[in-house]
Image 1: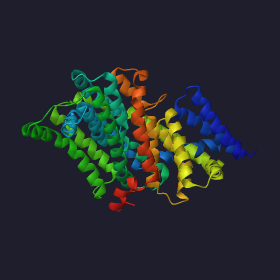
Image 2: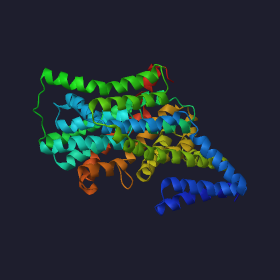
Image 3: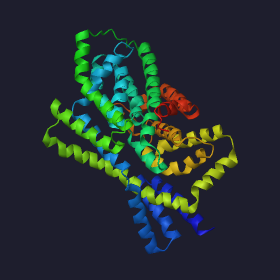
Length: 434
């Protein structure tokens, strides 16, 4: 066995063994990658290269958008913006079966479209709408599954932190194109959840008779439009070339802060805690990007991406079958790994393969993100699943069966996104972003 092959084997084994023993994913990647680097080159050189790769991986203007979007999401959650978005969502969904649950799904799509976080959306909307749904006689289990299943839409509808990470790893992929490509898959996911929620609501007798008069509608829109305008300002500014995604994220923070002060839900004394929470979230993401820089270098040196590509191509040359295999791998990986490290690990492995037959990096990016979003709903990691269960005070075993119909429509949407490029490429191509 050559030295480079040994290094690659050591890295893979060390990462999986440490994960099996419960090590944090960032530590596992860092330990495995540095051990492999130590085998490939002399001790002093390995330290220098490791430091260089860690610095280079985060020395990106695009990645600066992540802490700003995280902070903007936390400000919206604390500043009363989430509650006003719920009001706007009710106008859309109030006449549908299971109106409050439908409102929850629409509100997750709206809030996620601003915060970029599925967990934040599920916690915020579950906390606001959960008690209201209980008063209307909805069961805790039904309320929880509708909220949890629709939570990941915020990771696809822009702005999306995971898309920013993907654009950095994939190399020179337009963030604006990725953002625009996320709208149709995100809305497709949300509409699928609304259909399932409606069928469940009819079976349970959750039929709404509520009607809103013109005065109430105008009042709700008047209160909600300033919050909704943030989407127009940030995404419109990015598309119009007025500012970059990073500059747009900073504008989102300023806008959220001003609205929070106007609504009088955030005071100066609250800011240190909000900022500290944002710092902790950002630090985890940036650390993962740092150690992935070493891992990416080792993977290139050891030829792991080429080995995986050759193994897949030896199995079949049918691109549709290869995409199916990739989907299955990513779905399984998503069950055990958060989206950020999964994107960092598998993008350099899978992207070169799909590009050999001309698949767009934007299309593949949405396919990968959507796959990994499914993992946020499944144990044992399932961040949105666990956060939603805590918010609604239900146990996973109580709702896992009820989630199955949602999984069916979500996986059907994933297949459409995978095999029909129109669902991801139509908007970016119409806007001449690709």
